[in-house]
Image (cartoon, rainbow, N blue to C red; front, top):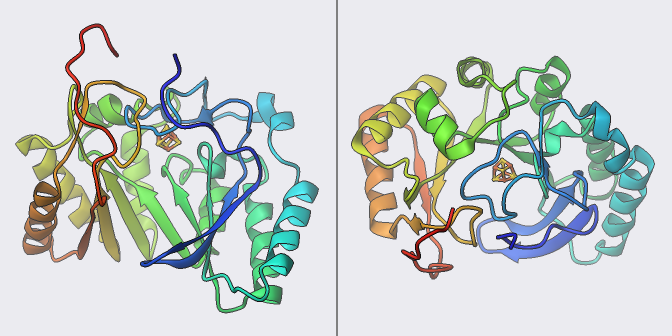
Length: 273
Ligand code: SF4
């Protein structure tokens, strides 16, 4: 049975109201009938990746078209006029920057935002795997915010937790992250069958964060069901401890994003992935 929550069924989701972010609108520009991603993270809320690739040309017909994206976004922005939108974020079913025309979508969303909600902020939640592509790199730079994934301080942990497709190179991602201004790093810490909170792994992660020098890092743990079984949520106290240790060591501000309640307990059932 496929683990995880169902994929989003359309281009727009939300807006949702959150205390931290205000009213946020999500943009899903990935296919809706299967999960396509350049990573296969053990903790992914959508379960295991169906199409694992950085090359999306063979799947181009499965992504939303530029016209459909434009009309869906304009429609919701008009509908929400009286309520207001604070943030518009590319995220969704897989890695949003893998859309073959991601750079055009960024420019269209920026125009529509300017027309309807000039005060709103336009950004992306990305797994960082595409920063090496010139067009994506420059489109990321045109956004108001970039929340970029870094779950591992070394290539071994990267392979274990994020399971990238073969074309993705950890050192290349690091090199580009270091060159990108105003990055917010986002890190998922997990424990159990797969873990990135061992002492050696944490020390390496802190070192990499110090090299990247993000404007801040957000760290969190499982809030949703995960692709792999036998994963354990990292307790809030441990996240707070990692945040304090990182701030002390390298002076980067770290926010521990703590779930109000663990989504599901650790299970020790045999025979699960
Ligand atoms: S990068 Fe995001 S969508 Fe892709 S497998 Fe990891 S958690 Fe899932």
